[in-house]
Amino acid sequence: DAGVIQSPRHEVTEMGQEVTLRCKPISGHDYLFWYRQTMMRGLELLIYFNNNVPIDDSGMPEDRFSAKMPNASFSTLKIQPSEPRDSAVYFCASSFWEQETQYFGPGTRLLVL
Amino acid sequence: AQSVTQLGSHVSVSEGALVLLRCNYSSSVPPYLFWYVQYPNQGLQLLLKYTSAATLVKGINGFEAEFKKSETSFHLTKPSAHMSDAAEYFCAVSGAGGTSYGKLTFGQGTILTVHP
Image (cartoon, rainbow over all chains, first blue to last red; front, side, top):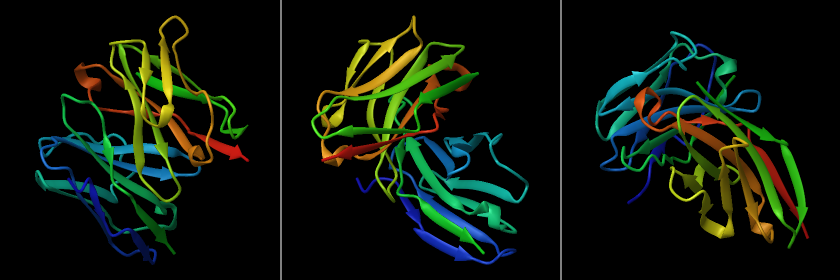
């Protein structure tokens, strides 16, 4: 298996622009997680899905952030409008309910100028 | 509610020396506990996990961790450090079932430096 795939790997944008991050989970996994990693706050869980349904979005910082999972093999995290404080590495992870182990993608490094 | 505290944001050891990275947790339900490693500019990789079976868990790359309920600890050890072990290590906890299922809470991370 190719593992969790994220795109783009790097994104540089200007404040106010819309940013869309993409994730393809491991085939057969029924949980998908979005995390944000910063020096100040460490690893934060933003939202997670089970069978394409959002279960807990309490970590989503503001209404500017939204996430969707239209099918079992694709998810997006959107920031609109983006702000410099959104600069971080965003990770997607997936898991299979019986195993509890989350498999992480390589991350998207976002820089908002 | 669950939380993780990693004692020491930076640990430095000599090559061949014992590695000890400390992790204490709190959880209102029986926990599942994990150690992940992150190499520079990469995602997190699972080292090992405790899911209520044996309290001494062996992982990849010679690492192991012991679950001690009385101390609410899950410290990570390796008898002999190698240069390639230099990375950031994260301890994480999730609730075993119920509404906490699948939701990992991570510690702040410990950066391990290995000196020649």
